Amino acid sequence: LGRAIPSSILPVCSALNESFGLAALFLSSFLAATRLPGGSVFVLAGVPPTGAADLWPAFLFATAGHALGRPHSELLGVL
Image (cartoon, rainbow, N blue to C red; front, top):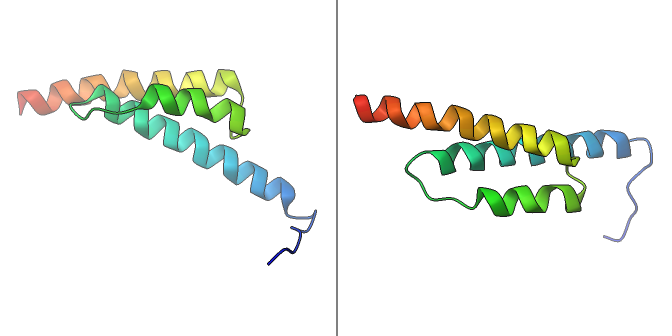
């Protein structure tokens, strides 16, 4: 406890943080576009200030999640 993270692995931690942040944003947007209520707007608002991702990649992942979630919901309704 209380030990600093070695500087050699900081870029790896930063890349993982961005990947997980964008993946969580995509998943929450995808689920919010289906029948499940979700707080994708809150996730979108929280990703850039935490440093998990920049603003434009966050918008792109949220848009992709919504764009793919809606047809998925429609397909499940047909089945």
